[in-house]
Every structure is written in structure tokens, then in C-alpha cells.
Image 1 (cartoon, one colour):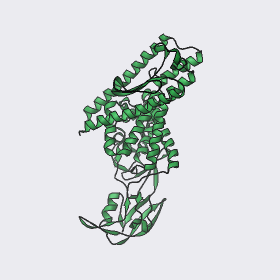
Image 2 (cartoon, helix red, strand yellow):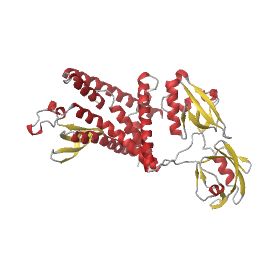
Image 3 (spheres, helix red, strand yellow):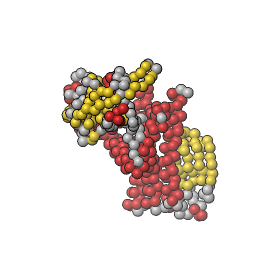
Image 4 (cartoon, helix red, strand yellow):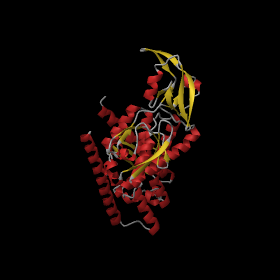
Length: 444
């Protein structure tokens, strides 16, 4: 199956799932508030499949255009209401109930992200420490004094232990102040502070793919840190713990994990001194290196890995999921605001082509990556739908709030002008998104 077809299928499935979650929020809260639901549709346009059920004879549809969905409530503004259904139309219900229904869609998107991050927190996702790789001469990073093979331990006041957190923190600091304060650690465990200054160049550096290349450094090879230690293996028996940094083996310096592996494989059945850094202090441990038969002969193994897996119990994962959802939501809001103010490039707006590629790539990488991408897209959908644009939930909430304050609905003319302005705003947003998608296709 071609990559393009996988991307398309993954995109349709992902959007359908997230739209179903969003619309189910409107649907279930509307039902709880006593409203009559006429149709629940995943997709727009001509229904491809319809199922009618319940006392209200609600139509449940899968429609032809898989780019959204909707819940249609009984509404007196759209036609006469049967006397038997008096009080069940959307506009007949109290305004707080209507606002609750409108809020429910985005709320369920955030709930989906919470559940996804809860599952991911319990399952864990293998990741690597943020190690500085090659530093370009005459770059912002070189001017700041950043060096290859240093470990990035903090960005501003935020401690970081993986590249995902590090990149978001770097972007946040750069956009906010035009500079990136870092704390890095050398191979001896000593820490120092450096600050990358980018000034007015920060908007360009927010363009897709420009952040690290523009700053002048790339991720490096994993350092010789025992992130995972196999129970009962040579390293475990010698007292090596997860997080220990191995700086030498039998007198040979080991900066990267590749260095460590190259030395260890040559020392099967040997007891050798291994120098480590733990909590900023150096100590020496003696390790009985195991001999393992392979196709290439007998090699040494001690049972450590540079990848770490942070897992939480079911209760602890709840707190972690709330924390992560809150961070991602706040970051999305900040980035949207910075786009409006011109501090972040609008080239970051992605359309269906880019989203399909992201989801397709994650599908090939595995379930955990799919769930991570879906959680991020769900948060984005929740935030976008709360924007005060008339055709979105946020705009409708504004209409209902105005009616609540003034005691009567806004005039038809005012609502029509708002709808037209909202449609124009969405069309502009979609135009930017499709333009960016096409530009990325031709530049890749």
C-alpha cells in the first residue's frame, strides 16, 4: 500500500474519530438538557449511510465529505415546531443550557486528550535525552558558546529531559523574548548557563523546519547514560542505576553511547572499572562484563540502554494527563496569539495534506505515536472551536451571551453580518492552510 494511500486512510479515520468525539459532546449534553436531536452526522454533504433510532427518530449519518460533522437540533428559527415538541427546540431552552451544549464539543476534545495522555502516561513512550549535536560555525548557537555533546538539562526555568519538551520550551522562550537561556551539562557532570540571542530574527525561525537549523545546532547522538538497566544484568549487579552517566570504561573515555558500546563489546568476560557521574559526583564501580555469543562472535554486554520509558501508575497518570493537556493547550493558545501579533510565522498553519502526512507517519510508527498525534489535534480542534468566530462554537457562545445580557436575540442583520465575517475568516484560514500544504509539497 502506497504512503499516500496510508496517509489518506489515516487522515479520514483520525478526523472522523475526533469529529465524532466533538459532536458527541454537543449531542449528549443537548439530550441531557432536554433538546430534541434531529440528526447526528459525521461528515458533510450527501449521507452515505443512515440509521434512524430512538423515540425522537434521530438520524445517525455517515456523510460523503469527511472533513467535519454536525448535530442538528430542533430549532424554531428553521421551521415550525410540532406542539408535542414545544420546549424541546434549541432556542426554547434556557440560555445557560444552550451555552453548555456549545461548550460541550470543545470540552469533549479536551476530554479525549486527557484520556489519551492518561493511557500514554501508563504505557510510556521510549524517548531520548536532549543532546547537543553538531554546532554550525558563526551561528547563533556558536556565538552563545554552545558545544557539541553537551546535555541540555533546562530551558529558562523549565527542566527538560527529552527533545519534545526541550523544543517546545525553546520555541516558547525565543518567541517571548528573542533569546533562549539554556542550562547544559558537560561529560564530567558540570553545569553552565548559555543564552542564545536571536533578536528580531525570531519570526523567521518559527517557520516549519527552521528552528534548530536556524539556531545553528542539531540533536546529537545519545550520551553514555544508562537510562534503562536490565534487571540482573552485569550493570545492575555492579550497582549502576538508571540515570548514571558513564564517563569511562577501563580507562577509555566514553562520551556517547556509541563510544560505550564500542568499548564494552571488546571486553567480554572481563572485570573492569567503570567511572560514572551520579547526582553530580563521580565514583568508580567494578563491572563483570558478560560474554554473549552472536553471529559476529563473542561480544561483551552489560545490559544498559540510552532510551528511557517514563511510566506512571493509574492514579499518578491522572495528574500527569491533566498537566500535559494543560501545557499543550496553553502552548497552542500562545502560538495562535503570537501568529496574530506576527511573532510566529503563519506558515505553521497546516491543512489536510500536512495533517494527513503527520497522522500517516504516526500510524506507521505505532499506536502510541498515533494516540499522541490525535491528542494534539484534538486540543487544537478544541481551542480553534472556542475562537469568537460566528460560525464556530465560540462565536455562537458570544451570540448567546449577548442575548442573555440584553434580554433578546441579536437582530437578524447583525447575526447575518457576523456569519458572513465568520465565513470569510474561515476561508482565509483555509486558504493559508492549503497554500502552506502546497508550498511544503513543492519544497520537499
